[in-house]
Figure 1: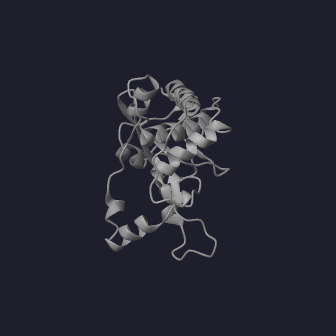
Figure 2 (figure 1 turned 45 degrees about the horizontal axis):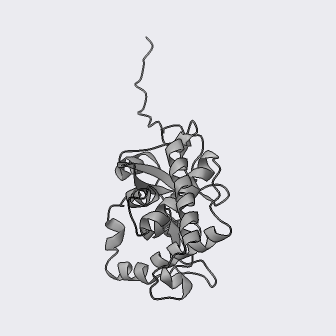
Length: 223
């Protein structure tokens, strides 16, 4: 008699067409809905997000991302003792954080977390609220919401690269606008203790155009 043995339980990963080699959850609140992505560097070291069928592979929570993909940050693979000339902390998809292209951020915050027993690493990730930036693009806010605007810009870059969409994000006044947003959020990168941007009319027009394009990129990429 032929014995039929039960097959071992196999965990099937969701298929995705392209995505990070290793990554971490990246959350966003966009059009009033919270979504989570799998974000990290691709084969070329460029920041990207997982896509399927040309659209973003989204999850309802950071826990759902962590339960699906191997979550591995740059901090986890960095050498215990930094070597001379090694890159410092880097900027993540929603501002300065543990993974992305190097920005030379100060490591004081990370050292402080370590001295406190690494409590910060136990904190749940927080989704970036892109709503204020969307409201500003629509003319519903007067002041530029710098943090939300920077997050929208940076996510627009990563999503456009991942999905093959056109997004002119740098060059000319765009460089100046992005630097002002970054200096407000990470002034130490520019040798400052703090920075409050003052915008010209032309800069505001370029900023609104760029963020408006980022909104279009995200909407076109969402399933």
